Length: 251
Ligand SMILES: NC(=O)c1ccc[n+]([C@@H]2O[C@H](COP(=O)([O-])OP(=O)(O)OC[C@H]3O[C@@H](n4cnc5c(N)ncnc54)[C@H](OP(=O)(O)O)[C@@H]3O)[C@@H](O)[C@H]2O)c1
Image (cartoon, rainbow, N blue to C red):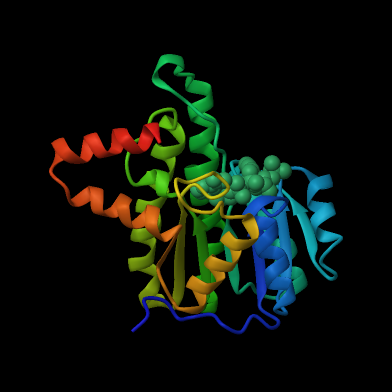
C-alpha cells in the first residue's frame, strides 16, 4: 500500500510552486501544465518568473521571498481569491552556496538555513491552516541527498537539507492521518556529473518526481545507484562508512 495517496490525474489541480523560475521548479511547472494543472509560480525575481509564466498560458506569477514569513500570507490570500482553494504546494526553492570549514562564513550559512529550512517551515506554516480546513491536499518538499551525511564544502547546504528531511518525516506522520499528503524529493547531485552515469537534467528530475508522486511514495530519490549506495553506507560500521564517504567526497 502506498504511503501517500497517489496523484496521477493533474487535470485542473491547483498547484503552487515556490521556486519556479528555473531548474527543477520551472521543469515541474511546464510538465504539470502539460498534464492540465493550474499553476501559480513563485520566486524572488519577477522578470524570471514572468519568463516561465509566459510559456504557461493561464498561470499566475506571484513574486515572494520564502525566507520572509510575512510574504507568504498575502500570496496565499491572492491564490485563494483566485482559486478558492489549493491542491498541491511544492517547496522547491533552495540555496546551494558552498561553505567549507576553512572559510566558514556565518552569514552564508544563515542564508542557506533561512531558505532551505526556515523557508520551508514558513511556507508550510502559511498553507497548513488552509489544507487542514480542506481536509485534503499535498505538500511536496524538495530536499537533497546531501542531507543524508555530512560532506566537505557543503556544510550549510547539507545541514539545512538534513533538517528539512527530518522536518518532512515528522510532518508526514502528523498530516497523513488528516488526509494531507507529504512528499519528499531527495535528488542526489542532479545536474552534476556522476561517475559512470548520465547527468540528470531538470526535466528528467521533474519527471522522476512526478513519477514518485504518481506511485504514492513518501521519499522520491534519484539517481538510484548513488542513493542506494548512500543508504547502504549508513549501515556500515563507522570506521568503514567514514572511509567510503571520504572516497565519495573526492569522487
Ligand atoms: N542542483 C542540484 O544539483 C540539486 C541537488 C539536490 C537537491 N537540489 C534541490 O532541488 C531544488 C531545486 O534545485 P535547482 O538546482 O533546480 O534550483 P535553482 O535552479 O537554483 O532554482 C531555485 C529556484 O528557487 C527560487 N528561490 C531561491 N531562493 C528563494 C527564496 N528565498 N524565495 C523564493 N524563491 C527562491 C529561485 O528563484 P529566485 O532566485 O528568483 O528567487 C529559483 O526559481 C532546491 O531545493 C535544491 O536545493 C538541487
